[in-house]
Length: 567
Ligand SMILES: *[C@@H]1O[C@H](CO)[C@@H](O)[C@H](O)[C@H]1NC(C)=O
Ligand SMILES: *[C@@H]1O[C@H](CO)[C@@H](O)[C@H](O)[C@H]1NC(C)=O
Ligand SMILES: *[C@@H]1O[C@H](CO)[C@@H](O)[C@H](O)[C@H]1NC(C)=O
Ligand SMILES: *[C@@H]1O[C@H](CO)[C@@H](O)[C@H](O)[C@H]1NC(C)=O
Ligand SMILES: *[C@@H]1O[C@H](CO)[C@@H](O)[C@H](O)[C@H]1NC(C)=O
Ligand SMILES: CC(=O)N[C@H]1CO[C@H](CO)[C@@H](O)[C@@H]1O
Image (cartoon, rainbow, N blue to C red; front, side, top):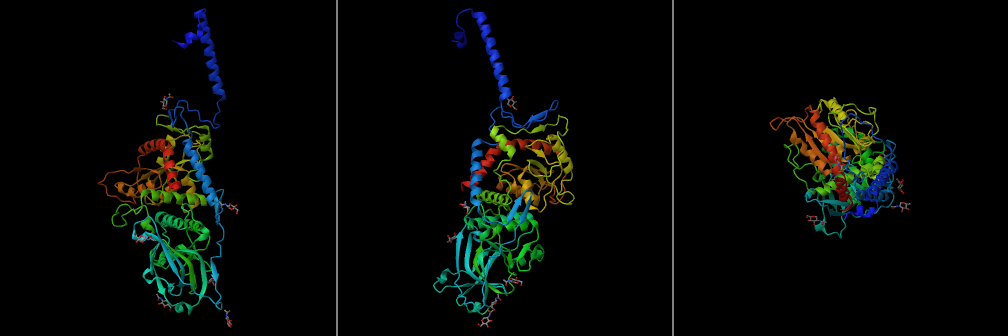
């Protein structure tokens, strides 16, 4: 039976029914009005877009959950709390705030002087190696050696063997991050005694070769694995305690990168060294609060290293070289599984962001938090080509890297690997994403290039949602982009295969990857050539990718967080 008929009853059926309907209608209208006025509104308002055709990104038809799923938001929050706790008491010399950073003086208590007249009893040496998860013999283990003597006059290391040590277990070769290091075994210390030990280096000393000055190789393939293995060595998988580590470049720094190495290093009056390049200098200050030493730091004296740390060859741990690349890089393996790489580079990038006091990849901006708390999706207006392509709002002269950006990365004027019509591409994107006041996603209003200021670079990349750029070292900065954001790679005609490299990095960094390249497989690839892009194709791709980012966001972030905290 119809329940309304039952309610209405039996007297004066027609008139009563009309009145009842009227009352019900008024009641519902009142409800609607009340709802309209009393529902809390977001305090930012969206522009009035009469007469323009726009796509409203991600209207989820009332099933909004916020910027990401509520459960993930909670998980991310507890991750952030735990990191804060774990790292609260680490001593550091890097200070960052309000868009600037400074490096405090290095600590000096790494060296203990021995007076020649002191009776010094020469302790025995020892060694211990621990296997890593790599199966490659050259990076299978990291080793700690205790009490190693060093004649800096001729750059020779000595292991003073305890008579009780099993000679069959003795070892005189260890793999450093730059190659093999030979340690001479001594059963009689007289050879050292004649010179006399003048100082003891008390901190664990990582022994390695020269840094690679190429940003992609140096930053991703040297520093990345260095972070990874030192964090493992110190048993804190997501950070390094810089008060418990010093770095020493052995004589291999001479041969590692031809003769020009010393140009990138500056010798200070006390024999310690400093990196000349900004990015190396600042990353060094994250690794250690003690000064950088080389085999030329010791004025030809004899010393003892209390702890030396050998970490195996780092490029055997690099995630990049999955295919044999025309003989230039004959490194055709991935010794670890993908999850290990994802975890290692995620931890590396989080560690750098944290050192710079920049927001973690798992931290929402204030405006994203507001969306989260009010359970609204962001709204980004996309002009699909039919609307008047007028930028809305003031054309941003933004130079603070705080929003979320679509960025065209280009080395304008460099003469190699350029996008020749990058300005047209920026204009096309501005027309498609016309709202320059949108607090969620905007187009960086001109071409962008990174420089060697790692702080600014990390800040900008952390705020980039879509990075469009040609194959090159600048794409290394995608390491700072949030999981699920997009690397849009552009390669010159015929150079589709070049993408193997940054495509692989994008996978390692938990990003989405897209590729645009003109021409076909018969074109000769000239990898430094300029590329003229078809703007409408790229703009269309970007519109789709921005939709995808929104759809996949919770999934990517949640996987990344699982990798980081549950392994
Ligand atoms: C940090 O240091 C403070 C003061 O010494 C101490 O109370 C606190 O427990 C330490 N926190 C951690 C996480 O070690
Ligand atoms: C070491 O001791 C000798 C004799 O006691 C003394 O003549 C000499 O000056 C001392 N050397 C140093 C460096 O203190
Ligand atoms: C490390 O692995 C190698 C090769 O699998 C093995 O021979 C060696 O005993 C292992 N060392 C340790 C300390 O587990
Ligand atoms: C370094 O000097 C010591 C002491 O004179 C000598 O025994 C050793 O053979 C030298 N090492 C090299 C590699 O020349
Ligand atoms: C080397 O010489 C410099 C300058 O005299 C001095 O400051 C430094 O302590 C010396 N280092 C060693 C290890 O003797
Ligand atoms: C019921 C409802 O509001 N449906 C809308 C859901 O979103 C799509 C795409 O924005 C609209 O086309 C539907 O009308």
